Length: 510
Image (tube, rainbow, N blue to C red):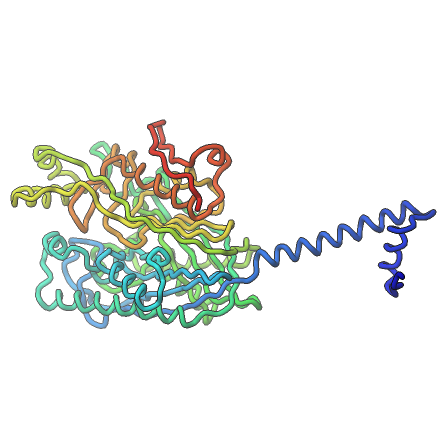
């Protein structure tokens, strides 16, 4: 027996389904629209199921400004310690936890770079104390040239300076680096304790001050201004908000050196990246702003040379991020999958005669000096440098590629070619800033960015870009990034510019 409904719409639908009748066309229209509304409701439920369960995000920060005069990083001919502090330096941490409990930790800092000598112990301590895997920890530096010296190979560091540190300054640098390591571990642990429900979304803006610095002259390429040269002016932005829409944090980036201020500036300062973060944190009280450096190995801010310009670039970048935050942003959903590879990057094999010829070159002269010294001591020059490369995949919505070293802008185009141009965040200066990561083009043209390693001894071979891009492609496939249609029809591989024979990579996405 039918239970008669009191709802007139349900009643009419039931009659139409079972009896039809004289008003059959009207009944069919009613059924059609009820079906549409039902599907729309189901669609909303499906979307909700995709987005649920949502993210949890934890935040923490530490002031890392040195408390006494200290030797500064970035310019080897800046021979005196810092004389003052014009703005504070910070390290910041963000933990992301998806609905399945997968976690990833991002740490950023207003320093010249994370070398393996710093990042290795930090990651090891965090692995031990938190259970995080190293592949789920990403450290990114602002490449700030107005901060303290960060340790790498101390013997190379001392010998490459016009004036050695001296006992007092050397102890201060060692003490600062030890405290920095402790601070980085502490904020990583603290962020894990501060997890709260959150939503993620993303957008992008433009950084107008980014300028290619590889200036072509009659005497070769110099560090200068090249308005026609390639740069990446993208400003990727990620909004982190509470379930009620309250802004909690903002993550943003730009692909450029923090070198508005030159070697004559002897005050600790956060440079334009620090001023951009400060702008946003003043505009949105209580919000944590974090900066990620992109592939800016061959880019400088323009114009340069004054503190006022560094502050102006920072304000302009902060205002652009603020503008993007007010737009309709795309959701970033989970799950999050992380990958990390240590790659043996190939170094050039040169004869003594070839090395001697590099002593007067701008860039490789650093290599030539130390390589000849090693050979004189009967040592063998290394053939590879082991460097970490990371990749984070956010569901189907975003891929964050973390290049180590100082990658030139070509790696942005390489990444787009290998992985497809959509839903990408391309970062450099991650985990180990060991030197410039050049492309075959840059190596052929010459210039400062060909100088290779500065934490060890070696010049990169032109095939380094193929080694790197094959690994990036393989990591993206394994992490579950949706690959371009052309790659769905064949085994994923990196195809170098110019039609060179590519190296094959695994097509298994498990």
